[in-house]
Length: 281
Image (cartoon, rainbow, N blue to C red; front, side):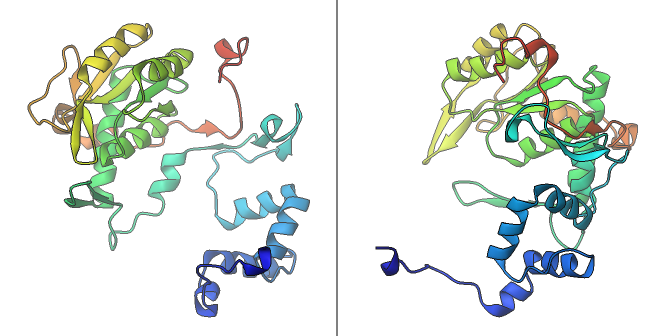
């Protein structure tokens, strides 16, 4: 049966030679690494030598660490889940995203289901992230705090994620089309201090209001200190006792929080101390 299977598409030799994988294999060869010539040999080497592979990948991608790592991999437990990665290092995801800023290309290209689209420049993205991160700091959100979101897949969700990462807080999100019991069960486990919501979402040409559901969700999240509300389906939509997204974007000067990377995050896998007993994460 397998002899009758044919690939749908095969990259040309020119495309292969201009790929990131080809550049990485060339870098390996010129930096005392193995002489891998194709995907199969690269994959085989990576699974047989995971520590060497990830160390080389860290160096090739020029990861910016505020502290050097002590070891690439340690295994206090068993299996992949028990592995600690690059212990001792400290980095910030948002810093790495903005390290690739290029005003020649947009940071985000967004298109709605209806076909309307917009582009967000790197300058605009940085400004929005800085404003939101500054507001979050003013509200007392800090390193290790949990931030939850039930926004659709929209640019504002990216902005909220990067702002959260920039200050060292922990991000968790659910699709707004999940049922409220499922969303509540997920978020109750992590006890977020901040929640991002919209008035609803759109799917298959139809708008689905969700404000009523978020009112119920807010009651269940007992550690919640603030809710940010974005009018998405209806520009006039409101939710009581929330902070409107547009007010944050209009009311805070980005220079009040110009340094997006004051906090950095240790690299590794861990479970929040208060959740270790029930292991729900």
